[in-house]
Image (tube, rainbow, N blue to C red):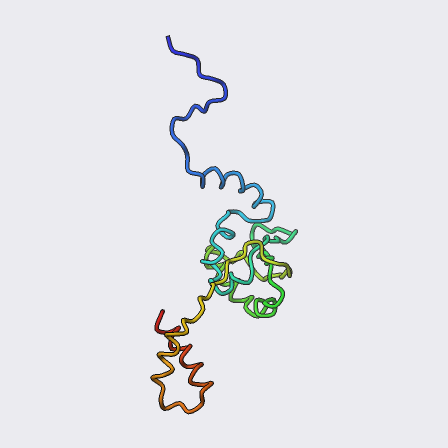
Amino acid sequence: MTEPRPPNKSFRGRPRPLGQLVNKAIAEAFSRQGFASTELITRWPDIAGREIAAHCEPIKLQWPRSHDPEAPEPATLVLRVEGPAAIEIQHLGNVICERVNRFLGWRAVGGIALRQAPLSKRTKRATYRPVDPKAAEKVAQALTDVVDDGLREALGRLGAVIKRT
């Protein structure tokens, strides 16, 4: 005789990848924002390009109210943009639309709208190590043709940084 299975135990025997569980959980939230799939959000740096994605991120797709199935009107992609980069992103609007449409495979986006706000996910900026004074002095001593002491020291620091990379 087999023991009855406790009611809180899963019937499946193997664990499922977290990506499958999360994708199902957030798909409904994304669909409320006009996104048919999560890929526009999750693959934004690949779609828009790293330089553009560093300064903006998609919030939602606004579809027009009059929806003609014969000739659907394209949506407006609403982007969250950092304040100082808004003008540059606005000038790159056609490029962004083209890249999104190319990714989706049809003319889904006809324009962009910007909302200035801090980005939700910030990337850490690179931390710089201080210049080794001994290495900088060694490079500076080799620059005998440079007469100006300040310029020689600056070139020594630059040379030390270049040598360590």
